[in-house]
Image (cartoon, protein in one colour):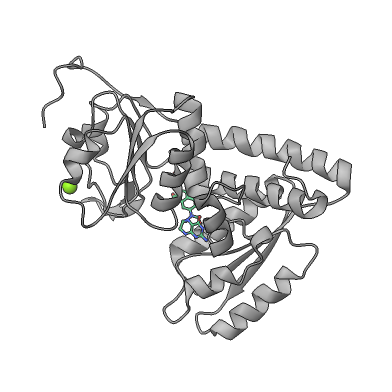
Length: 302
Ligand SMILES: Nc1nc2c(c(=O)[nH]1)N[C@@H](CN(C=O)c1ccc(C(=O)N[C@@H](CCC(=O)O)C(=O)O)cc1)CN2
Ligand SMILES: [Mg+2]
């Protein structure tokens, strides 16, 4: 791979510190939770449901519980066996929907085979759907109404706003069109005034499209898909991928969807993996939980 003639040969992108940004956001949320409690006498409560024993999911839900407590909110964990039926899961969600101490509910994904994620996610009361994955919140986002926004795309948006400010007129290329990240993020960037292109499995020349992006977001789950020569010199690159790989020495490390060592020589700014987008996901979950509590208690979002 050769670097662009428009960049000095020793060019290095600046790193977008998602870990630091998320820590600051969590501290702000902690203060807002205290103020909310002082004003309304209510402590926001988040219910997290994990079905089965996926090791990565177990780590994520444990971190969600720890960070919920740190933010001054109440955490309610429901660890269900792999054998849980859809009816049992739906019955639990129905109970949580009616529980006044619970303001946010999420079901950790992926669900074990045999459980219909769409049906389960849709059973969550839209006002408590802090993952923003139900059809009501997804539909509201699509038509530009206020909604609970999925946590990872919200995290990407907050990082991009912090880095770039006004994004009107910028060409944002989003590679990946999942309901969890790519599609909602494309809609959020459209609302920011970007011209948005979405690349997916059938896109003819993804590299050529990617090279047009002032902003390039990669959320495919396909490790190190994007090479340095896919990136427009000076572009802002957001790498959403997280894949754990085992090195020759037997140790494990995380890699993104972007070949970092190549991208860093071309991009203007880039999120590292780990420490980029990942930490924003849980910080934004806490933000959504406080927002849901505020809406449920006061009927207002601010
Ligand atoms: N119901 C949901 N399920 C899943 C979501 C989600 O938002 N809602 N997202 C992911 C998993 N996830 C949270 O649930 C998550 C992923 C990554 C991180 C994170 O902090 N990553 C770190 C690295 C952590 C590590 O060492 O493994 C980083 O990138 O720096 C937090 C949360 C799928 N499921
Ligand atoms: Mg490759």
